[in-house]
Picture 1 (cartoon, one colour):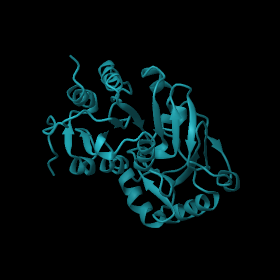
Picture 2: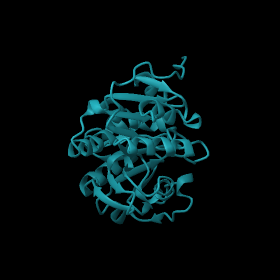
Picture 3: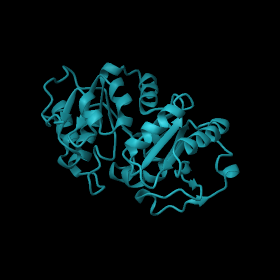
Picture 4: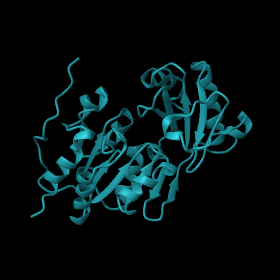
Length: 279
């Protein structure tokens, strides 16, 4: 299947958007895990024009330190796919939407039954705990995984449930998990290696972003969103205009309004420079 080529947007809003929402990893974070000076400058340009910049990510707050520093410890972020609101100035959690204990335990039971061999973990703002089978990923290299029995692992509400399999891909895991967990939690993947994730029912990047926009008096038509993975699709469907980077998942490339340059090509920055010209 041929993918859409990266082309400049053909439609430019008459007025600059009031809200710019962007995913991080794979969207503005480059393959070497850095954010370019051009991207930082482009997002600062949005703020100087009076626009609201919201970083909307699957990362938990504990992995936001370098990002907060890159953006001068200012602004707000939505973390863990909508489970947390995060103040980058104070580096504190300002909102949390956890999975209830009973739902967490039942979700874990069903996931193990549907996907034999999967290892499970729960993620909090600053902690990660897993069962004996959970394999920590590259992002967790500097994080000590607490190994707990099920009573303690699923005994308190958790913002995110994570499953990693020794062989199955993220797409394969999502296809197995969604039918058995769909009415309990919001299941998704963000292209983590052999990883599937879940947050509380009704929690998503779109829900958290929509709530923030309403509190600021901003309509969806006044918002633009950038992303690269299927967990970004609700957010991009909510926004008045959506942009997928050229390196995005095929589902994203098929759904967005515009396909732009890749994360390594500063595609988001190029668009923002056009939307927010400075004399």
